Image (cartoon, rainbow over the protein chains, first blue to last red):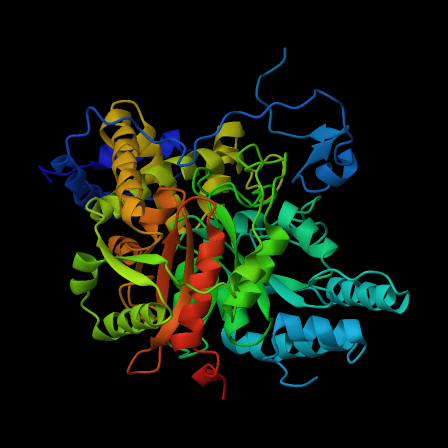
Length: 100
Length: 488
């Protein structure tokens, strides 16, 4: 494990960032699989790309502008019908802050 | 109906428009076939009897009223289940969207309805389009109609299977790193991955937004071209949709390849381990040459890095896109003791293993301390891959490779090793990273009777060239006379 690309501790940290819970077994398996994948990706290190610009968009494009005109959007009840829980015309969520 | 279920979309439209067959009868026949074969193939997740028959009845009424009929009037089509359909559940083959019913249609779905097409239902896929064998569906494995123990490819495996097995003449899939081309190759049909921006992504559930494109799938190049014609074009609801003229893709099928320069990536072709795939590509190259194309050698020196680059960029984008699935506004919610636990429990239960793995990899590549080393580096190498094509297109009009290194692999063969599964995408990833247009079309059968796919890659927005060259390959060594063996 000395040369691991990603440690179990890092896996658990990343899972927390990604809002995923992993069982002990899942975390161990995830560590092994990500380690193999990241090991393969080390092949990129043979390239010196410090002077190469990144390509975030493959096809050059500008953010298009359009007139700011109000339009009808979807019906609220139709959207709320897809919510696991709704209340008073909004999405219901677990309590975030305690109110005194 | 003559030649059911193998008649083309053109023949169906002609019969419906001419009154030789009613759209309702055609639709009933395909629905019955889908019902009968789906237990064996699992290519459909939802068959929409009511919606299909009502769309067909509308076509019949329009014909009786003497109205103009659209280019796909009465033609049945199967849609990958990551395309939003108003009122029809759209699952992405994920438990997290198992009951999701979109309140709107994707742009391509609106275009299909306007063209008179009849949507038969929604097809199986790798969960959130993440996979190369369709085995990451949380519902069922799709079976390859040429050999039931083989993978149909992925992620648009259900769509490829449905078209190949004669359950629908046309299908739509989505392609992020090869997801229409690879299953098309495995199932012996044609698929086009349009240039990034050619087809609106509005209503396509996002996987990797800088790569996703919706692509047509059909048993012939001409039908795929017709379908591209219907779905291509600008849509202001997708900010990356290209505001430029579309081509005449059906007409392009008759233009031939005289004078066209086809780039052959010789070192890559010589390095192919699979003799059948190599023979298929050589057969296609001779067909192109015979019809007047010139073969030139080109090289893509950075293509070998495409797997690393793709699986860093696509997973990074996916980790961001899939943050929206939190159990609050739609889809599954698994309640926890507080909001955070509700998120984590919902996502842990709602996402399958491959989706979780990719979210993890992408989150890692974007996280503090690793962004430069992984994500940014991948985007820089992406530039090198794009430049390889720029250089190649100075001396050729199309770049030719196989679509896949081997014909369809067996179900279960690669599931225990994610990296091995990723490596099977080596030929379809480079054009995706460069945003280019590409086609996969059959160029023969292996010794064991499995289809082999040829990939042709064109410069941005040159889809017409793909239609012209694809048609020549189909005429020279296609599979139009062959039927999938496992259906007998």
